[in-house]
Length: 193
Image 1: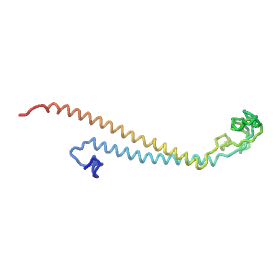
Image 2: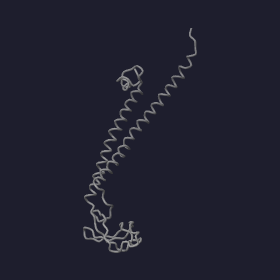
Image 3: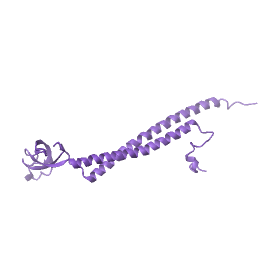
Image 4: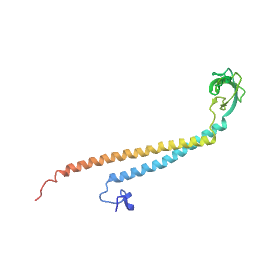
């Protein structure tokens, strides 16, 4: 029989055996709890994080609105006629919110755009400037990545905790072995009779 053969080899710590120590049973429980916490905790935490991120991004898509703003001064950079106006720069803009109140801020515009050029920007329900919300497919990808990273981070906690507990048990067992060797090793050289 090989070391990995037979159904009892994997569960040896659970079987009745005169050589089984209390620390073996404790280690079996620690390993079981660590793996259960790793798998269940990682999956549940990852799914919860994914659901939360998807909900937040869906809320952004529903609440944030595009608004047309006008440049209040010429955008910095070269004029479009010189051929180097392909870049986008920050420029001062003004827009009217859905509540009819005028707002001012900065938005990206083509370099060298003249005063009064229309620029599309995004605002939240307060009229505060925000970034363009992610599309549904971008939101799914972002939520999945956050879920995987969060789940993996959560799964690492019980896995590392179990590893630390097992290492402590192993050090304790080795100290007990050293003590036993010191006690019985001195009697090996004696002759009886």
